[in-house]
Image (cartoon, rainbow, N blue to C red; front, side, top):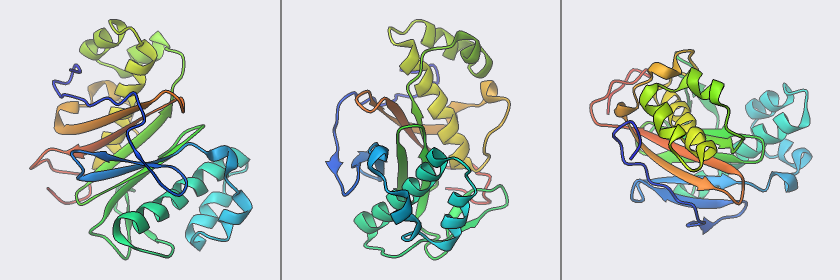
Length: 229
């Protein structure tokens, strides 16, 4: 149990279907599919620039450094793979945005998605309801950072863990994925974020050095994108 009162599923082993570039993990009893690509070192940036939408190409080229471009393009290519695997959709999806900045698929607004990237991996998730995903590299635990973003109960849980690095990253990804699900985006008061309003699935990919969390809302929670579920 986490300090939120929610049971969080952990998978410390590879329980996934291999796909073209990465792997697919079924979350929430198969209701949502999470895709992860941790093979970024083999990702061909030049080839990808010719296989994405003009919208995404322009966004990728705004990055002055190669890792940023690679992550931006790889996340989009993974989304394309997910849309084909789950729905048979081909081509390059185009994004529109809600007022709060949350993206949605212009031609398929009924398909909810979220994408994320970190230093060594990218991830995306598809669902039939609002959803958020965050993937983060496992890094050494920093008590000062934890005290800044976690409330008292969460901090106690982390400090009591035998793997404080993973325990902290798990809570961090829970908060980030919830904010992406609601469309609120990054905010300064992460400590006050009420995780009771979300349902979470966490996969710990120690082999890839990353933690990924998917968040969906509980029923009747008002979201920032002007709809309820």
